[in-house]
Length: 187
Ligand code: HEC
Image (cartoon, rainbow, N blue to C red; front, side, top):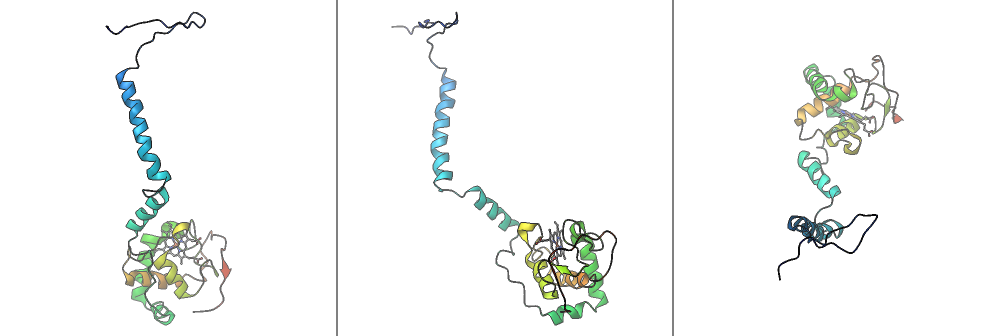
Protein backbone atom coordinates (compact mmCIF):
# COMPACT_ATOMS: atom_id res chain seq x y z
CA UNK A 1 0.00 0.00 0.00
CA UNK A 2 1.30 3.46 -0.85
CA UNK A 3 2.47 5.41 2.10
CA UNK A 4 -0.25 7.62 3.42
CA UNK A 5 0.77 11.24 3.41
CA UNK A 6 -0.89 14.01 5.26
CA UNK A 7 -3.07 11.93 7.48
CA UNK A 8 -4.63 14.20 10.05
CA UNK A 9 -4.40 13.01 13.60
CA UNK A 10 -7.40 12.93 15.77
CA UNK A 11 -6.23 15.67 18.04
CA UNK A 12 -7.47 19.18 17.95
CA UNK A 13 -6.13 21.78 20.28
CA UNK A 14 -8.00 25.02 20.02
CA UNK A 15 -8.34 24.50 16.31
CA UNK A 16 -4.73 23.46 15.78
CA UNK A 17 -4.37 20.01 14.23
CA UNK A 18 -1.35 17.95 13.27
CA UNK A 19 -0.39 15.53 10.53
CA UNK A 20 0.94 12.09 11.26
CA UNK A 21 4.02 12.45 9.07
CA UNK A 22 7.23 10.53 9.45
CA UNK A 23 10.09 12.42 10.96
CA UNK A 24 12.38 13.79 8.26
CA UNK A 25 15.39 11.57 7.52
CA UNK A 26 17.88 14.38 8.11
CA UNK A 27 16.32 15.04 11.51
CA UNK A 28 16.50 11.39 12.50
CA UNK A 29 20.08 11.28 11.28
CA UNK A 30 21.08 14.11 13.61
CA UNK A 31 19.11 12.55 16.43
CA UNK A 32 20.82 9.16 16.14
CA UNK A 33 24.19 10.84 15.73
CA UNK A 34 23.74 12.61 19.06
CA UNK A 35 22.93 9.28 20.70
CA UNK A 36 26.06 7.69 19.26
CA UNK A 37 28.08 10.74 20.26
CA UNK A 38 26.78 10.52 23.83
CA UNK A 39 27.75 6.85 24.03
CA UNK A 40 31.31 7.74 23.11
CA UNK A 41 31.51 11.00 25.03
CA UNK A 42 30.15 9.81 28.36
CA UNK A 43 32.55 6.91 28.89
CA UNK A 44 35.47 8.94 27.58
CA UNK A 45 35.06 11.74 30.11
CA UNK A 46 32.85 10.43 32.91
CA UNK A 47 34.43 7.02 33.27
CA UNK A 48 37.82 8.51 32.69
CA UNK A 49 38.89 6.57 29.62
CA UNK A 50 40.49 9.69 28.21
CA UNK A 51 42.28 12.50 30.03
CA UNK A 52 39.98 15.04 31.72
CA UNK A 53 40.31 18.77 31.16
CA UNK A 54 42.62 19.23 34.14
CA UNK A 55 44.97 16.58 32.85
CA UNK A 56 44.89 18.08 29.37
CA UNK A 57 45.75 21.48 30.83
CA UNK A 58 48.57 20.00 32.88
CA UNK A 59 49.95 18.27 29.79
CA UNK A 60 49.82 21.48 27.78
CA UNK A 61 51.52 23.45 30.54
CA UNK A 62 54.17 20.80 30.72
CA UNK A 63 54.72 21.03 26.99
CA UNK A 64 55.37 24.78 27.06
CA UNK A 65 57.53 24.53 30.16
CA UNK A 66 59.49 21.44 29.28
CA UNK A 67 62.21 21.76 31.87
CA UNK A 68 60.31 22.86 34.94
CA UNK A 69 58.35 19.84 36.06
CA UNK A 70 60.64 18.35 38.63
CA UNK A 71 63.58 20.59 37.91
CA UNK A 72 65.58 21.06 41.02
CA UNK A 73 67.62 24.19 40.48
CA UNK A 74 71.25 23.60 39.64
CA UNK A 75 73.49 23.67 42.68
CA UNK A 76 74.53 27.28 43.02
CA UNK A 77 75.84 28.52 46.32
CA UNK A 78 74.95 31.86 47.84
CA UNK A 79 78.66 32.76 47.72
CA UNK A 80 78.69 32.25 43.94
CA UNK A 81 75.58 34.35 43.47
CA UNK A 82 76.73 37.06 45.87
CA UNK A 83 79.99 37.28 43.94
CA UNK A 84 77.98 38.15 40.82
CA UNK A 85 76.39 41.09 42.65
CA UNK A 86 79.89 42.65 42.65
CA UNK A 87 80.54 41.96 38.96
CA UNK A 88 79.56 44.99 36.81
CA UNK A 89 79.48 43.00 33.57
CA UNK A 90 77.13 40.36 34.94
CA UNK A 91 74.96 43.03 36.61
CA UNK A 92 74.64 44.90 33.32
CA UNK A 93 73.51 41.68 31.68
CA UNK A 94 71.08 41.07 34.56
CA UNK A 95 69.67 44.56 34.18
CA UNK A 96 68.97 43.90 30.49
CA UNK A 97 67.28 40.62 31.26
CA UNK A 98 65.20 42.30 33.95
CA UNK A 99 64.05 45.08 31.62
CA UNK A 100 63.18 42.60 28.89
CA UNK A 101 61.58 39.78 30.86
CA UNK A 102 60.66 40.84 34.38
CA UNK A 103 59.78 44.53 34.39
CA UNK A 104 56.35 43.86 32.88
CA UNK A 105 55.24 42.27 36.15
CA UNK A 106 57.70 43.64 38.70
CA UNK A 107 57.95 47.20 37.25
CA UNK A 108 60.97 48.89 35.70
CA UNK A 109 62.68 49.51 39.04
CA UNK A 110 61.46 46.39 40.77
CA UNK A 111 58.86 48.25 42.81
CA UNK A 112 56.21 45.67 41.99
CA UNK A 113 53.05 45.55 39.92
CA UNK A 114 51.44 42.16 39.27
CA UNK A 115 54.46 40.59 40.90
CA UNK A 116 55.74 41.61 44.31
CA UNK A 117 58.03 44.49 45.16
CA UNK A 118 61.64 43.29 44.93
CA UNK A 119 63.16 46.35 46.58
CA UNK A 120 61.71 45.98 50.07
CA UNK A 121 62.69 43.66 52.92
CA UNK A 122 59.65 41.43 52.60
CA UNK A 123 59.75 38.16 50.71
CA UNK A 124 57.02 35.62 50.08
CA UNK A 125 59.47 32.88 49.19
CA UNK A 126 62.42 33.78 51.37
CA UNK A 127 64.97 36.57 51.26
CA UNK A 128 68.19 34.66 50.74
CA UNK A 129 69.74 35.10 47.33
CA UNK A 130 69.48 31.33 46.89
CA UNK A 131 65.73 31.61 47.59
CA UNK A 132 65.48 34.20 44.84
CA UNK A 133 67.44 31.93 42.55
CA UNK A 134 65.09 29.06 43.28
CA UNK A 135 61.95 31.14 42.63
CA UNK A 136 63.31 32.51 39.37
CA UNK A 137 64.41 29.06 38.23
CA UNK A 138 61.38 26.99 39.13
CA UNK A 139 58.70 29.69 39.27
CA UNK A 140 55.47 29.84 41.22
CA UNK A 141 53.36 28.65 38.35
CA UNK A 142 49.96 28.81 40.02
CA UNK A 143 50.57 32.44 41.02
CA UNK A 144 51.72 33.59 37.61
CA UNK A 145 55.47 33.67 38.18
CA UNK A 146 57.09 31.76 35.35
CA UNK A 147 59.83 29.20 35.70
CA UNK A 148 62.68 30.77 33.80
CA UNK A 149 64.79 27.66 33.62
CA UNK A 150 64.62 26.64 29.98
CA UNK A 151 63.35 30.07 28.96
CA UNK A 152 66.60 31.85 29.81
CA UNK A 153 70.10 30.43 29.71
CA UNK A 154 71.50 29.56 33.12
CA UNK A 155 74.01 32.42 33.14
CA UNK A 156 71.27 34.97 32.45
CA UNK A 157 69.16 33.57 35.27
CA UNK A 158 72.08 34.05 37.63
CA UNK A 159 72.70 37.55 36.24
CA UNK A 160 69.14 38.67 36.81
CA UNK A 161 69.10 37.13 40.29
CA UNK A 162 72.26 39.08 41.12
CA UNK A 163 70.81 42.22 39.58
CA UNK A 164 67.58 42.14 41.56
CA UNK A 165 69.59 41.53 44.71
CA UNK A 166 71.18 44.95 44.15
CA UNK A 167 67.69 46.52 44.01
CA UNK A 168 67.15 45.75 47.68
CA UNK A 169 66.96 48.84 49.81
CA UNK A 170 66.38 51.11 46.82
CA UNK A 171 63.32 53.29 47.13
CA UNK A 172 61.56 53.67 43.79
CA UNK A 173 58.38 55.73 43.55
CA UNK A 174 55.02 53.99 44.00
CA UNK A 175 56.26 50.83 45.67
CA UNK A 176 53.85 47.91 45.95
CA UNK A 177 52.86 47.15 49.54
CA UNK A 178 55.07 44.57 51.28
CA UNK A 179 54.12 40.92 50.89
CA UNK A 180 55.45 37.96 52.83
CA UNK A 181 57.87 37.85 55.73
CA UNK A 182 60.47 40.36 56.70
CA UNK A 183 63.94 39.02 55.94
CA UNK A 184 66.84 39.99 58.13
CA UNK A 185 70.18 38.75 56.93
CA UNK A 186 72.59 39.22 54.09
CA UNK A 187 72.88 35.85 52.46
C1 HEC B 1 53.87 37.37 34.27
C2 HEC B 1 54.30 38.11 35.41
C3 HEC B 1 55.69 37.90 35.94
C4 HEC B 1 56.88 37.95 35.26
C5 HEC B 1 57.11 38.22 33.79
C6 HEC B 1 57.90 37.76 36.24
N1 HEC B 1 57.36 37.58 37.48
FE1 HEC B 1 58.37 37.27 39.20
N2 HEC B 1 56.60 37.04 40.19
C7 HEC B 1 55.35 37.20 39.63
C8 HEC B 1 54.36 36.96 40.64
C9 HEC B 1 52.85 37.05 40.44
C10 HEC B 1 55.06 36.62 41.82
C11 HEC B 1 54.46 36.28 43.18
C12 HEC B 1 54.32 34.78 43.34
C13 HEC B 1 53.58 34.44 44.63
O1 HEC B 1 52.66 35.17 45.01
O2 HEC B 1 53.94 33.42 45.21
C14 HEC B 1 56.46 36.69 41.49
C15 HEC B 1 57.48 36.45 42.41
C16 HEC B 1 58.81 36.67 42.14
C17 HEC B 1 59.86 36.56 43.13
C18 HEC B 1 59.66 36.18 44.58
C19 HEC B 1 59.28 37.38 45.38
C20 HEC B 1 59.06 37.07 46.86
O3 HEC B 1 58.49 37.95 47.51
O4 HEC B 1 59.44 36.00 47.33
C21 HEC B 1 61.02 36.87 42.51
C22 HEC B 1 62.40 36.92 43.13
C23 HEC B 1 60.70 37.14 41.12
N3 HEC B 1 59.35 37.02 40.93
C24 HEC B 1 61.63 37.47 40.17
C25 HEC B 1 61.34 37.58 38.81
C26 HEC B 1 62.34 37.69 37.78
C27 HEC B 1 63.84 37.77 38.00
C28 HEC B 1 61.67 37.76 36.59
C29 HEC B 1 62.27 37.84 35.20
C30 HEC B 1 63.21 36.84 34.80
C31 HEC B 1 60.25 37.67 36.89
N4 HEC B 1 60.10 37.56 38.25
C32 HEC B 1 59.26 37.74 35.95
C33 HEC B 1 55.08 37.54 38.34
C34 HEC B 1 56.01 37.66 37.34
